[in-house]
Structure formats: C-alpha cells, structure tokens
Length: 412
Ligand SMILES: [Zn+2]
Image 1: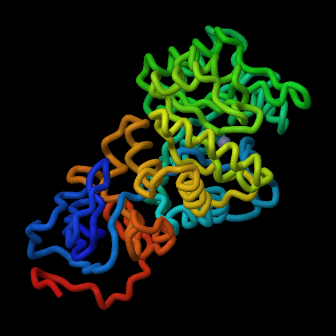
Image 2: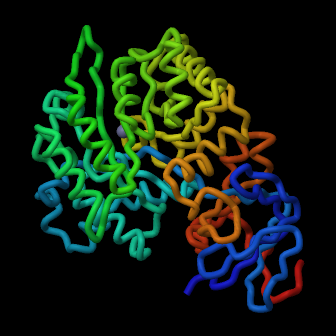
C-alpha cells in the first residue's frame, strides 16, 4: 500500500493546462490521484505530509516519441538468455535501466511509436499493474510502412516482423489497423512512416495514397490518432491531405530554407501537431543546419502551430529521460518561452492525445508529478534539479532529505 493520502505542502505548484504558479500550495493526493490543489486545502489527519519550500511541483513530463526496443526479441529471446531463469530474462527484456532513466528525469509517460507489437503490449500490461516500476506507457505497436519504405528498406526490417505492418492494399490496411485498435488490448495511437527519403541519394518509397488514407480513416473511425514520420515537403502535403494528427521529425530535406506558405497555413489550420524531435537531429547536424531547423520551428510556433516535445529516445545518442530534457531546451532555443517549452511536454501532448488523465496539476488527474528545485519558468535548467518524482501518487524518485517529512495535521 503506497501513500493512500499524501500532501505536498509549501511548494509552488504550476496549476492547470496553462501552468499558473500557485505559491505556498498544497497538493493533496489520494489513491494515486490529485484530490485537491490550492493555497487553502484542508489536510486530513491521516495524510503523510511532505513540506517542500523553494520547490516547484509540475506535471510529470510526457515523451511523445520513444522506442523501447530491442527489435531482436521478435522471435523470443536471444539464445544466450535461454539458459537463465524467466525472471532474469524478463528483467533484461523489460529494460530496467531505461525505465529508471525516464523516471529519474521526471518523465512519467512515454509513447512508444514503433516497437514489437506483442512485446510492447506485454510491457504495457506489466507497467499498468506496477509489476514494472516505470513511466506510464502509451503504445502504437508496429509501424505502418511500404515495402520500399523505412524501416524495411533502411535498416532491413523483415516485412513480416512484428514491429512493422506492410499493407499491400487499402483493404489489408483497414484489416491490420482494425486488429490493433479493437479488442481487449487496443493500441493508443497508430504510427505511419510516409517518407521519400533523400530523393537524390537514398530514395524511399512512401505509402500509396489510398493505403495511407485507409489507415488514417480506420484509426479515426475507432477514435485513435495517427502519428506520422515524414521527411520531404511532398510527404507533408500528402499527410495533411490524409488528415494525420501528429507530424514527427523535422529534417533538412524538408523545409530547410523555409515553409511553403500554403503548407504552413494548412498545418496550422488543420491543428496538426509537430514534434520536431530536435534532440535526435541536433547532435548529428552542423551548427548552421541545426539553426535553420530551429528557425522553422520558430515560424511554425509564431504562426500558431502546436509543438510537442519528443526525444526519439532509443535512437543512437538519445538517452531515456535526458533526451526529452534536451528536446525541451532545444524548443526553448527555437523561441518558445520556458513555460511554452514545458507545456510542449505536459499539457500540449495530453491534449493532443485526447486525455485529461495526465499532463496537468489539477484535481482529478493522475498524481504523476515532478518536483524540482527552483523555478523552471524562470530558469528552464531547474528541470534538471529533480527532487522527487511521483507515479500515480507513489514516490518513485526521492532526493529529498527525510527531514521535510512529518505526519498528522501539524505542519512544520
Ligand atoms: Zn522514432
């Protein structure tokens, strides 16, 4: 039994979707949810009290694009693992280092946008019942792509592998999406790759328009959003025509020198969100190219578009947790205020995912919370000063000294 009743007192809480500072706030947590938040919340006798002056309570962060991998687990575990007990194999398969890495950085929700379907369902089930302590897990299952598209033609994913779906017709696409979005354990979101690659050097085959359309229609019919990996401006125009909900990545082979005005307008008018995943591209690009991409992010933002922080963690050089903190910092370098950059990792993705369960410090939401030293709205770097992380009211990271803790109604 963990923290049936817990009160965080004395901190500044960033309240609601807009993260308005409430100084000297009490955040009362009951049974894993936020029961009340404000300056004058009555604290029940039975509550455990944690007094946190000088600290800020904000929603746990959401990383909207991760890969939990590794793909080679498709056909069972690797031979070397078979000699070990099931407990050890599970421990290795379910990535304790990654799970802790996310939590240590205050990331309490991750969205897996492309992992082996059976494996990631198993992962989500075990996470939901807290057999595995880690972030809340939202999943797309496999990636929808074409026979000549990424990751089939790029990294050699077999078309029958469980982390891809390669529909050959609109009917097959509807059937494959239908199998994922219905039933007892549906996916949370559908992921498509629609990418021509680099047309001169390494061309790739995007999805056929009728197949793309069938995927999007079937997902929407069942109330699921569609997240799309794209590269070129032609990909973008077709994805907008198909009505996808989220665009992921922003590559130099896209709008490096500027957005075509009609596409920028179409993006903003459609409400499609953009997760530029600067955390993964920034480190690989020269300074000038990286700066150009940040200018494109700034233009999308100034035009009224919604940006989403997302790390693409699982890609080389992008680590669990720290990748998202870096992506938030890069959004701020692209012209977002600190508040806007943090909202891109909290309330904005919650709204984009259509959930009111996470992403804000607000009564009724899950108590997925991050406590940091200092004020991240004044100095974004304060996000790195993690003091405590709660997942459904359970303290999963604690760097406070216990002297701040008390019991009963008396406040220190
Ligand atoms: Zn990815």
